Length: 224
Ligand SMILES: C[S@@+](CC[C@H](N)C(=O)[O-])C[C@H]1O[C@@H](n2cnc3c(N)ncnc32)[C@H](O)[C@@H]1O
Image (tube, rainbow, N blue to C red; front, side):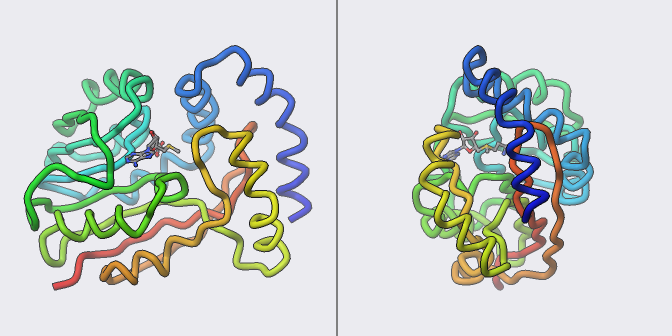
């Protein structure tokens, strides 16, 4: 925990300086771009490179997942923030997969029930208002047995670190101004929504300007 706190303290001043001169979307793209090179990109590739058919990605942000889809995927990328979507557009155009950016929210996904072959969620369940509703929508649009792939930061399973994350979450919410919570644990919610969880891999990335939260790569599938 000391290492994580030291990492945050060392890079916070520079991140706050950047926050003053960049828009929210630019700041996200700048800081997380460094995280992609530091290992996040490899996790994204592992999660989505085998997906084919009609894929729905929610909260696609500035499009960091797009380069890793294979040519056999047709991706509907749902993103409510126009500034994030604008930065995602060139990544969508450059991707091997056919990617369609859609203005919308994960609480009300496009498409009839059982119409999607796979779903992808990257760093989104931390910030949606109601993760249960979102997971319910994903369960609705996925075909039985279809893969759900997620990468999320989670509350630490260690008692003290987890309690500290709960305690400082209000401060973190004010700091990030994107509705990102650091104290959520999405795994029980994924199971409660009826998904079968096949594999969970923990990891951690130390990127300047981004807290080194505990991360989880999750391979799940719709029931049925
Ligand atoms: C931390 S960013 C993650 C972006 C991208 N998925 C990635 O992995 O870099 C969270 C994204 O979720 C989007 N978001 C927030 N609430 C949402 C909602 N209710 N429905 C869909 N997307 C949402 C935000 O606009 C933002 O682009």
